Every structure is written in C-alpha cells, then in structure tokens.
Amino acid sequence: MLERRWHSAILPREFAPPTANAPMTKTPSLPERLPDFVGLGSFRTERGFVESLECAFFLPASETARVWVLVRSRGRSLVLLDWKFSCELVVGTGVLAAEDVFHSGYVSWDWGEGVEQTLIGDATRLTVRRGDAEGSGIVRARFVITPSALLRSADFLTEREGETVSRQVVRAGPVCRVAPEMAFRFASVYRRVAAGKVESNVECELIESAAMADPQHVLSALGDVLTLASLAERRVLILTGWIVEYANGAAVTSYRRDFTAPSEEESDVDQTLISLASIAEFLNASIAKLAGLPHPGALKQAIHFALHGQGRGIGDSFVMLFAGVETLLNLFLSDENLEPIVPQEQWELWFERMSAALTGEKDFQALGPETQSQLLGNVRGANRAFFADRFARMCLSQKIDLNDLWPMLGGQASLYGVRNRIVHGRVFSTDQEWFRVISAKYHLLWTLERSILCILGWPIERSRVSARALGGLTLYSSWRADRDSVLRAK
Image 1: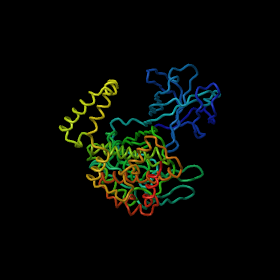
Image 2: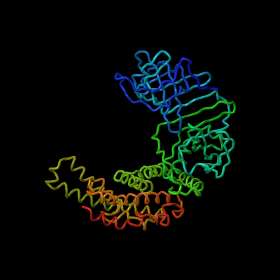
Image 3: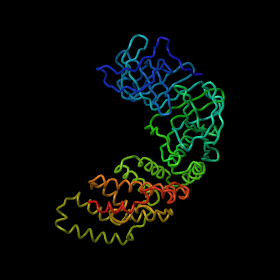
Image 4: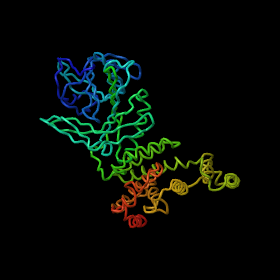
C-alpha cells in the first residue's frame, strides 16, 4: 500500500513570499504541514524534455482545494523553464501521476539543507495508485461531489469524547438509475476538521461497481446526472474526484481540479427549482428524457447558461440567459427543419428579380464586390424564419406556457427588445432604469427554466417556477409596471 511519508531531514516551513529575483510572485495558500509524498519524480514537458527532479506533493485538504507540487532544482532545468509539465512519482508499490502541472510561482522552502527558491506547480489532475490492481475485480467505486442541499442525506451522528461512534440515516440521499446496469446512490459523508468541528460533504457510490470497468462511460453518465441536479438546485455541482477499490486491496484515487470552485455559500433548500421531496423522481425521469433527445448536448448547454446567468450582474447575465433560449431554439427548430417564410422556389424567383434590379443600379455597382456580395447575401437570407416565429413554434411544440410572465415578444419593451437594446449598446442611463431590467432578467430566467423543464417532460406545477410558486415574489407581480418603465426609457 502507498503510504504518506517524507524524508526525515525535511522540516515544515511557512510558505514565505519569493525573493525579488523570482520570475513569478504568486504564493498559494497552503496549510503549514509536511508534504504527503516526497521523492524523485520523472518530469516531462509537451516539447519532449524529460528530467528527474526532487519533488513534494500536497494532497488537497478539501473537495475544492488545489493539488500543489513543489519541485526542487539546483541548476538550470529545461523542464522548469516550461509553463506546463507532467510528473510521475513512484513511492514503494504506489505511483502518483500528475497531469497538466502548471508553473505557478516560487516559494521559499527548506529541503533539509537550508531555504531554497522552489517552484510550485498547480496540478489540475492527479492519480494516486496504491498497489497493483492488474487482474483484480472492482469491488467499490465512489465519487466526491461539491456540497449539495438536494443530494445529501440527513443523518443523526452520535459522538463520544469527540469521536463519532454511530450514524443513523434519517433521510437517505437520492438514487438515480441511468441505465439497467448503472445507478448512483448519493449520501452525506463527514470529516473532522480543526477544533473538533465536523464538516459534511456529498459522496456518490456506483451501485453496480463492475460498470467502472468502462470509466469514461460511468463518468459521462454521472456528469449528465450532475447537470440535471445542478438545474434542480440552481447551483453548479461538480465532480471533484473518485476512488476505485479492488478485491486484492489495491486502490486508485483520482483528483480533478480543472474547474472554477463554486461559491461556498450553501443552497437554501426552499429556493431550489425542484423540491427536496421530488429530487429522486426528477433525476430518474429527466435522465431518461435527456438520453432520448437527438442532441442532448444542446440542452445541457442551455442548462449551463441558465445556471451561470443567475449571477448578480444584469447586462451580462441577461445576454447569457438569452443565449440559453436561443440554444433551445437551435435544438428543436434549426434552420434546416424550419419552413421558410416564402416557399423556397418562389423566393428564388423573387431573389433573381431583386438581384437583377440591384446590380443594374450605378450606386450599387460603386459599392465594390465585397459589399455587393454581403448585401445580396442579406437579401437572400431574409427568407429565414425570424426569432419570433421560431420561439412561438418551440413553445407550441413543447407546450410551454409563459402567459403569466413578462412577454418574450412584442416590441422594444419585450424581453427580446431589452436584449437587443443591451447587445446593441443602447444605454440605460439611470439606476432606476437598470433596476427595472432586474425584473426582466428574472422573468427571462424563469422563461428559460420553464422551457427546459417542459423539454424534460417535468410538470411545471411541481417546480418553483410555477405561477403558484412565483406568486409571492414582487418581481413576478410587478412586471407590467417595470415593462412600461423600460418602454419610456430613452
């Protein structure tokens, strides 16, 4: 088994700021502790440079903490002159493999012979292999998720002398079956931190562990589940790592840090899109619906826009949410399967006449070939269905009812009109005018969320974007006055 160990000569040192001669000055926030693993690592760059260097690994202290690698170099190192490299460290029968380690600055560190300037790398992916799993069957696979109000279990912990001695599950976390041979069970896990405090997090277990023989398939399926769970929670949930255990005692632990850590602020379970009581049913129904879509990636992208458009900004969030709506239009009503405004054969005859009339004008001929071609292309493209027509068709085909929300269409004070004003640079000149756009932003969010739920086949009445659920919100009921104010704004 791979153990955490270090050279006896190494003493813990505070990570001090680098000297003035250091090319980078970023100092990571690391706990004052010894490295988890130290040894002679094999380093490789994308340009093929290979070198053996002494290194020290600090495993992450939490689900979103970074994976840091200290690298010692006593002279000129071609590897450390590069901005990115990989590293493999063998310790006993175990192997640490760090992919995409980014040059992240220098720190002062004592390797046992006095303080030296030491490179620190930020590893986006790290795999720790303990023992040889070759030929041994998988007995358990667990996945670590960022905190979630909907996926965690509710447990009663009994402690004695500062140690947890028993755990009683009061409410189990949801189980989502992705396929007949693959299901995930979510639950809370606990760890004791400084001052005896107990922190909880979310872990997911693959019920049929043998499915992990195809890890990419499992990780892709879990990614889809987390996308839907993120929509339900209105918060981005991220897979941060996983542990695979084998029958012969070997284990493989994988950490991934190629993401922006979500806010540490906990979700309010009363403000989620889907209620806690319905989360298991929602996940199971939605994952089946998602799998049946011709282009599921488009819906997942729309969910991404819905989640990231909920930020505190106004203009940028509005544009992002609108991009989510347009993504849905492309999912169901692309240019290829929409009938043109005028039958295509008739339009070709009209276009030939308009083209001949334009090209016969001296002023048109003076514009130059490039401008002429652009104008004629615009004329030909004018036969495509407009946004209004495409949106109306989507709402009709997917049975999306938006009658109680700020209208998407209908002049410059519609949601579409507000979007055009923002992207074309027409300024809302006063704070009061921008305040009214906040209301439009939330109505656009609710429009997008309703549309996504309808496409997933989930009843709007069983969500917090229904008319009944929104009824108590001022922004929901005041949209007519806000729209009139936007209409008056110059």
